[in-house]
Length: 192
Image (cartoon, rainbow, N blue to C red):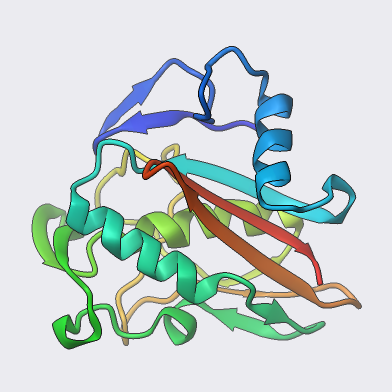
């Protein structure tokens, strides 16, 4: 697994892509620690990815946690297609509990409802790519983001842009999505 920690929107940090209590853990040890926290056996993991929201605003963290809860434990049958927008819903609606936070709109950073949910879709994309899922629909942001390497993002905009993948296996898979310590965004694709 290769990943980097990113600070804010644009700066990469030269530390391992995992933040428990120590940076001395190897990437393998970091992965094992998160899987242990999630109560997942490594043999069941098809794909895994981690990003950080450590330097995010409280509103952005709220939206990330809300989106993670909506996709956690979603089961995808063999050959079925998972739609991020279908599971997360319309994040543009304040009345649904979404908060205003940074979004990229036409190449510019601005505040809007649901800011931060693309970090979840991007973390999910990287986990599904490692898991060998078939990518059905994915779009890059119009500007670089700081939480995944360039070209490894998956932007979403309800009703316009979606992230979708298909389970190519002959067994069901499940999305395990958790946040830890108000900083870690962790997603694993596992055998269901």
